[in-house]
Amino acid sequence: MARKTTLYSAHIAAGAKMVDFGGWDMPINYGSQIEEHHQVRGEAGMFDVSHMSAVDVEGERSRQFLSFLLANDVAKLRESGKALYSCMLNKQGGVIDDLIVYYLDETRFRLVINAATTDKDLAWIKRQAGPFDLGIAPRRDLAMIAVQGPAARDKVLGLMPAEDAAMAGALKPFFAVQVGELFIARTGYTGEDGFEITLPGAQAHAFWDRLLEAGVRPCGLGARDTLRLEAGMNLYGQDMDEETTPLEAGLGWTVAMKDEREFIGREALEAQKAAGVPWRFAGFTLEGRGVLRAGQRVVTNAGDGVITSGTYSPTLQKAIGMGRIPAEADGTCQVDMRGKLLELRTVRPPFVRNGAACEGIL
Amino acid sequence: MSNIPEDLKYTQSHEWVSREANGNVRIGITDHAQEALGDLVFVELPAVGDETDQGDSVAVVESVKAASDIYAPVTGEVVAINEDLEDDPGLINNDPYGDGWLYEVALSDESELDDLLDAEAYEESLED
Image (cartoon, rainbow over all chains, first blue to last red; front, top):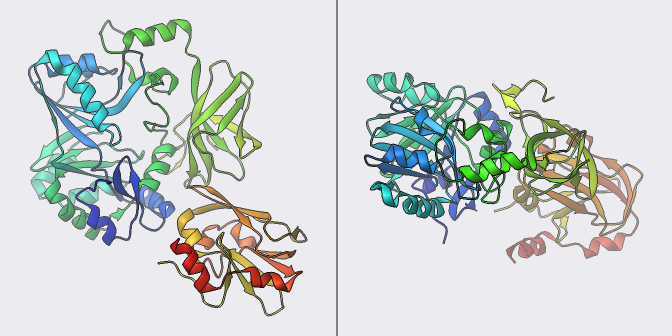
């Protein structure tokens, strides 16, 4: 029996086509995922992301615990509201999940974790937190709406009383602030500016309707995927999983290993670095017809690789993808597209920034 | 609820067939099919002059979600293809029975039209 967010009836009212996503009934589109994609790049769109979970970590040793739990270093978080993107690893260096951690104060941090991995993550976090005497509180009472696009912040601020708008308006990228009942973060998964707003579930529908009235268009998971891939952002479960280390998934930049900090998975990553990481993560585009898709075989001069995420890019009007290839591969790669080998262009993500192709992509 | 025009014929694999004034037959995919596929981004059509046999895979429509083969509902020679689909495959989504038509064929065997489903039979097949 699939779960529903508090915005379920809003999606139905807006004409959503619903699908099962990680055990949740979620909107894949409201008519055209391509139009929704363009709306976010051009103006503002909103996503119900309440299927994800906010988890509050509370206690004197919160910082110490998270320093051990996460591959990125929470020592970087000193200003209240500052956010950090990190992987959470198992002892073999495999990725359990990717998440964002917000520093609220010295005894309170908030994690935002993926929907499909929530149960697994919570069990792991609670187990690891044992010796630290902490409160681990999944916030299932909260809903989350992501408003994204060049006009997104203005639209949201326009709904708030002047004082609140001033606070939220002052947020720098990758910072959050609690404004009344709203936890507003200047973060997102689309490559556009915007806010991710966490609020009491009971208020979500009314807030959604006000955003609708302000001209923000509902957007579904289909658009969410094309937007994040254009922005070169990884998707857990596709680009990496428990069998993949961050070094194999293009996430080496999220692992802080320059100092002596002990964290779960560190030894395994050091061993992999010493032996040579066997896989390289790359971006690809395809000239001509065809859509890149997860699972497609990539042929290189050093053996086969795989597309881990692929789609059609509405902004570039061609297929884009990311994937793993053998570390020694050089020269051009090909993709096995339904039995035919087609030449790929290997590029460095992100593919799109500020609504246009990044340098070197086209 | 998908749209199923009364005056067309259909296949189980969601192609529609219409008889043109000049005796040729025009072919496309149904509203149900375009809705299931989502936004179409590429279309590969046969070439004018190609001989197509009933049941052959003759075209491919690709959406963000999946690529789907189109099967020839009738045998005949391809006499026209919808060139607008090259730049605007979304025509199939927006107007699957009109501007989103795929190709036209000069029918070799009239009796093949009897193999096709009428609107009611196609609608019933969707309920299965």
